[in-house]
Length: 209
Image 1 (cartoon, rainbow, N blue to C red):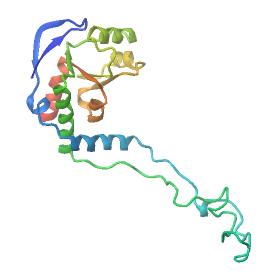
Image 2: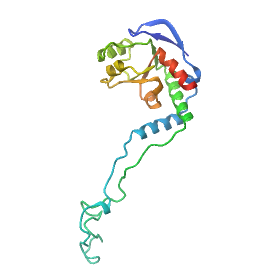
Image 3: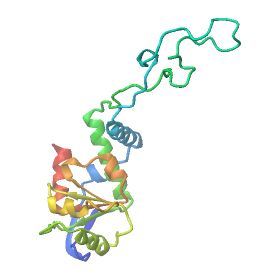
Image 4: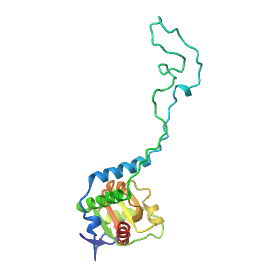
């Protein structure tokens, strides 16, 4: 697939770029996309939820009522789950939600996600750019110039760029990521990918390494 390259003013330049079909033109595998997104979201979970069980509640172990004849439940001490303030039965305990995915599966998921965006014509390539100072207004202007102001965007840069990152940090619909850190969830969670010219070379090297 061949795409035109835009400048930061939103104008089409005379340069074009050809997307690698082995990365942007494969038949998407929806199952591995689901697996990779599931792993990403699982890794975000802290897993620190905790309730106290019966043996962890502070209280007397004296039997409250006699075993039979009271007409009520056969509760024992005041720590019984049947009573307010008692322990909880089978409550949540701290756990690790993360799970393993093979590198080849994760790579296939990212290529499938990129291919889906390419099929949807949701990939925009812009010339490499930088800001002298962090300024949110510059990112807003760029999105308007590209006619993408109403969409959720993921900017893909070839490397770390503090000024661009800080400029986009306060915008709820704009995220910035380096090409080497691109992930399936980020790709699928955006409406359009805005990729710089140099970031494409990084992605090519990433998947062909």
